[in-house]
Length: 224
Ligand code: ADE
Image (cartoon, rainbow, N blue to C red; front, side):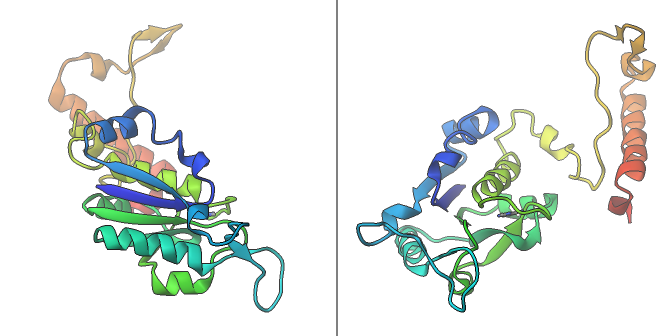
């Protein structure tokens, strides 16, 4: 799966994909993440990517031409399943959306800044708008990294133990059961006996009950 991320601050996206699972997925050739500097597609000496808003008001608006030039170049090279704009106005990211995206082949992600991007970019090119929550960040780069992480770990072959993505919190609309490791007794704080019993069916039953209980208490909305 290939992600092309268009950003005015590509440096912000250098590190998130260079570690751990996301790095491994790229090394294995399962995912490819390419970051494009929007300014490379801006005309003129200033390489300007924004302008004053029509109708007045505070803040600058990102202009159409650099985005259009970058998107058109990418579209001439391959077909894209989706062009996603990261925006607090979008549908809120959840595990279902991550699952939907994980079976796509090529995706472009647009990162906005300042007051926003010219509405016509959204009208003409964007097929999906995604928010990572009801709060406003300075730009779409961190949200883009969150989206890519949530999606890439679901692609088969990325996690060494495939079942571990399937048993993630939310994958079955339940939060995860608590987990423990050694020591079995830390200053009197003991691991539940059942986990030391070796009785796999009983352990699975306990985990399921714990997941239900935790979901009931913390996220009852998931059970509705
Ligand atoms: N850009 C700024 N805030 C955002 C958010 N909450 N989600 C997605 N993109 C954003």
